Image 1 (cartoon, rainbow, N blue to C red):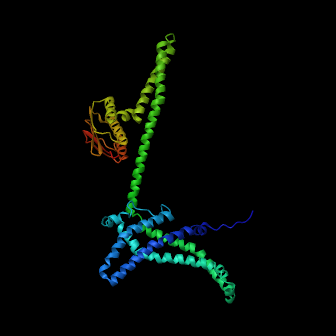
Image 2 (image 1 turned 90 degrees about the vertical axis):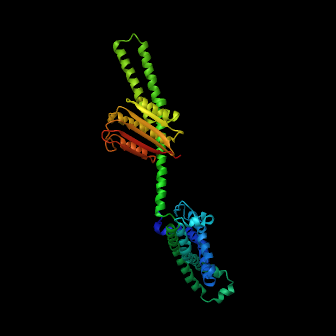
Image 3 (image 1 turned 180 degrees about the horizontal axis):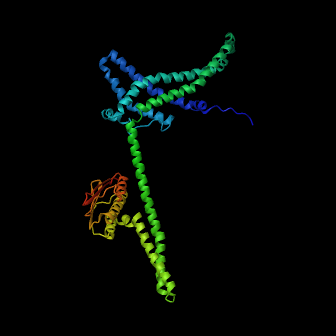
Length: 415
């Protein structure tokens, strides 16, 4: 097996990225030279004609937005989409609304980058390109020499020895340049992320927005999964159990010549089948009632109030239907709250009010029970609070000892 020498990854990476880093540095030189030219113009006018000095200064400020767009394009194209964390607002409005743009948090950071950092980076980038050119020219000195006419080469005594030293120096410089170019590119990326990228507050805001969006997606996915399970149970297992109960009922009515023991077995099976249908019906309703999708929150809550073992006064005032997620949260909140009232409150009646106030769906559940309910009391109120919080809603519970207990849930209805 032949022996193969593999240099470590830390040595190979700069050479693999040398072309990309050099192109990145070269692309940064023109916009930085524009900033240098504006500075030279500014200083020259300030010395020669002081009254015209504000003109290039204003041009430098206004052009910062355009130069920022160019720099962000450079990072996105040559360093990758994630190399520069761009704030939500770009520099494009600088030309159309300069005053408004100057009031933005990142405007003066952009001006500092193009007015101070850019002129300092321009000579560094130019030096990198010059060193690359010098390294390639020195490493290929024999090519340049042999391109000369023979009589000129013969007049240069000892040119081969000198060319050998120059070639060695060029090769050494070419070998060093990938590391140097990579360091310059990383230095520029670090400075740009501080002045042209997002601030810590902007990153936190973007993170909050991403988490809010992902949480909304999870809530919608969970609601869709509940709907799917409800449909599968309703159209599959529940229908089979109903058919089984019907067949057992028919068998009990038609098979009159069976023994008493056989009839008792059929009766028991028929009773168990009907109980299973009832329990599965409750389970399906608890997952996601079909009436909520078909007829809305008013009809769904009317069914909950009618099934409650205590009188429930229901008032639903909705001009338009809320979003499906808000409807589902409101339905399950009322259903679980009434279950808690029956189990723990020892109330004789309850009242449910649902109304829409602007962009908020307000649900109020009140009872005349003994009171003393709270999220830490083990009555399921903590779960109701989490359910409301899952859609950025609020949950409050006022339940003094002796009652009454009033639960208020506010759910945003933004589309």
